[in-house]
Length: 290
Image 1 (cartoon, rainbow, N blue to C red):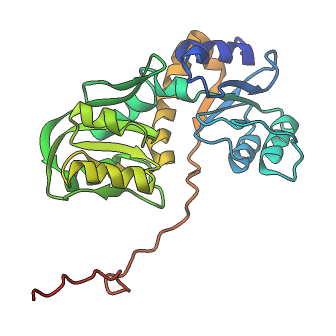
Image 2: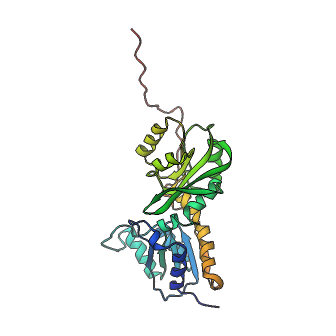
Image 3: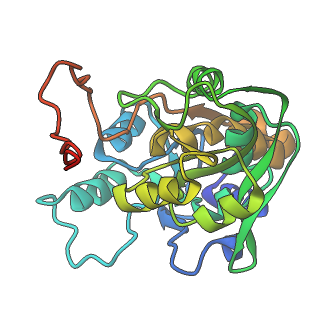
């Protein structure tokens, strides 16, 4: 059986997700590891958290592949007194290599957004917009018209379970068919969403002001918004990446085991529903006619 080394995986990953397709601000590629080290077990995850790294070490993993970077911004210490330092130390002490495929995986086909589009029920899509010459997000039509309520329910069933669930803005009974998707944080693409004539925009991390302004611009109509969670909208890609990497390795894939992490790295742990009888913000009454 042929022994695989880290260099073999780097070559295979970069054939699928070329580093030059990442956004200029992004930090992708090999973070830790020796290109000559043997790789027998691999773990795919969204975030390189301390807990995910410890999972990898406990399972005897040689290579951790994550979507999100560990070192997006400059650091001046890797002491274990910080979470970043603890993560770096754990990787090195555990002899675990770390490779990151972020925005280069977003724009790939198949990639993060094609996985999200499939979960949304879209079989044919086109780019939502372009950033730095590369496609960002996708838009397409459902096989049949449905309601916003039913679509949100089907999407929730297709996504991995996360504590915060889905946040939806729009009339539950509104008829919808054209869907735009953007895995991860996508509240900078509202102009493109409107230009695409999408009825619904599925993304995550929608901040108050951009989302409120988008709803104001739509005057209550489409595009309706679904904030489906950052981790959930990107976790879907991991199984696709696993399949693609094994295929890229060819006959040599028999010598490696690649697993997908099931650890939820969504930062929220639980939600509390608002009681309809709780204190309600005061709405001033219209002045009486004189």
